[in-house]
Length: 90
Image (tube, rainbow, N blue to C red; front, top):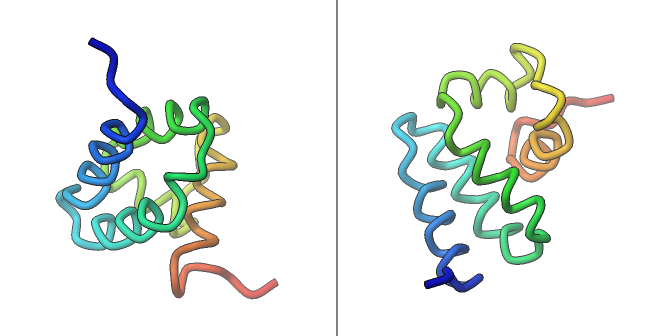
């Protein structure tokens, strides 16, 4: 049986909220609530792959502490843009 889009979005939102590092729970929960429903299938695929990454790496990418891998660059920039307090002044 194929997973419906609604079921997939629900699963990804749940995975976004229960990460293990509280900061990532908050950042990804907010991003998922605001953005997931508008993402096209290929970006949802990328988001799902990103959720399999280590939380410490994700937090470092989102905070800008270490460079983001090229495949996630646009997605991490989008997450960073929606995260309160993580945008840097130009």
